Image 1 (cartoon, rainbow, N blue to C red):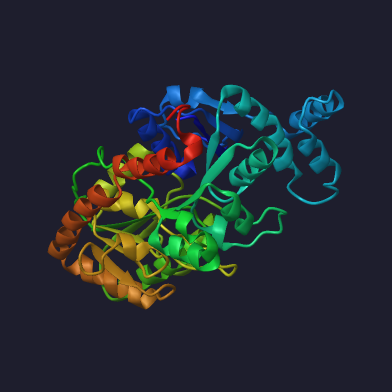
Image 2: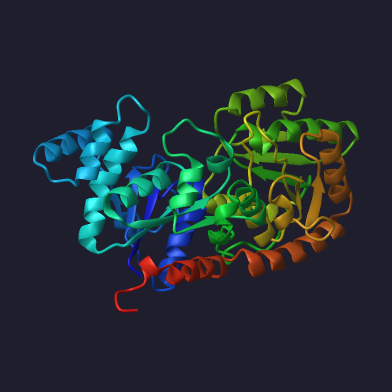
Length: 401
């Protein structure tokens, strides 16, 4: 299929689902060219070297602007590019126009007729301008805040939906949310779950001693770590003996450490910073329960389909989370875990207490969760669904088919 992938940063430690998708696409026989607008700062340790070497990076912004200026003077770009740049003025996001002009010319020379981007952000907006300048169609996968949080860029989410050949969202929740806002384009909005490599997770082997809760994610508000810390204080006050490991770093790391100290939980709750995938799988195998207290941020940002929940299910763990966005599509309440209302530490503590006091119930949830992860979220399943969408798209078919 003559399509190319376009990412803002690739491969990235915080977006493992992206490079897993590309790897599985290649395993299924589709080795699409990979372009990344920016060089990632956090290369994942388990990303194969051959995949990292296959990525083609765009020039840095200053170098790109200088090259574009020279080529404009030489008249080597379409009139649409020159006209757009002349009329841009002080509007934001000019870098997307420059990147599209630079990359589109190269894609055209390669015979690429379609671009697929992840997130309705920098990569998708670049793909929008590539279509405008060179007629190369595009599609994109929208995830969460890239759709939920409004921006002031000249190209908005509605423009992307209107011009895309098709749109992928990662849950029924986001598909329905997007369809309600853009009903005229409902037919081209599809749900394809983020996929994981279901193989490679260790068998559950809870650590000896105090039962362990594990939570994983960036230290940002939507992960609900503050609510989890408060719930742990309630569990401690109820006389339960346990430990809770929060894995992840980010802007709220120090305030969360302070909260742990304020609640007197230094010997119970740990905050260890980001860990490589191999270590995460070990920690999941030794845990009794996985918990992620997803919450809505003041600007409307939220997690939609947290990959770590799927990974915990694949590891055979019961999950405690909140009834937010697409989490109920992953966690079946009373079957694979327990769900509570967001920002309710008392409810969170009640659910965790239930599983801490009844490990047999947790084991039953874990078995069901592992089966659900393999059936619905295995990368070979989700990538096959994306491939089908690409194959149906006229622009992605090889010439003559």
